[in-house]
Image (cartoon, rainbow, N blue to C red; front, top):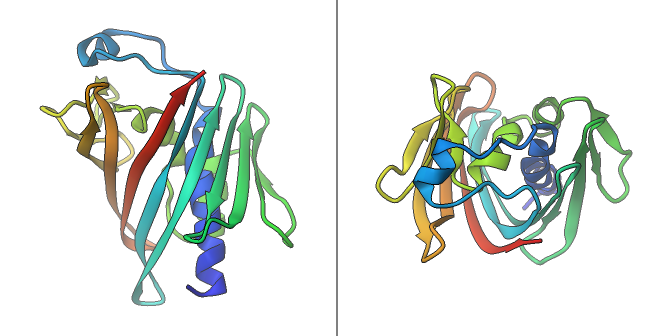
Length: 201
């Protein structure tokens, strides 16, 4: 993995997981009741992320792991290399998002999605992941839906195709999530997220 790719991955995962802190947690409703689970405002998640996209006319691939620590006021994401080295830490709160890497200046932006796109060169849907990691989404019509093993595919209102490939039993929580979208600058982008640990506080 090149230094450029390692940096991109470091930015990718943390952003991925932090982005949603700027999005107010959804109120419990029919989607939660139908799914038999509720949105958790305070939660710690650990897992793995793989990304494929196009740059300079060729396909690129990034792999790593992440941790996601979420409270109502803040989300902190730590991106790790395949060898377990901390590559980046992102914090998101009501003031905006910051990204920290060893030996690099701190980057910040009011919108974590903008920070992600500017830094990585490919779109990371951080603003949606707060919902998506827990099996909820806003569909193309803006309606809040709850995914399930029987209804495992959703197209978000911003064009991401979300596929819940595997589930945690008996908790009825997502285990693997595949995301895909065609973009102008990064071509066909695909992300695979595998959730390995999940703990509410």
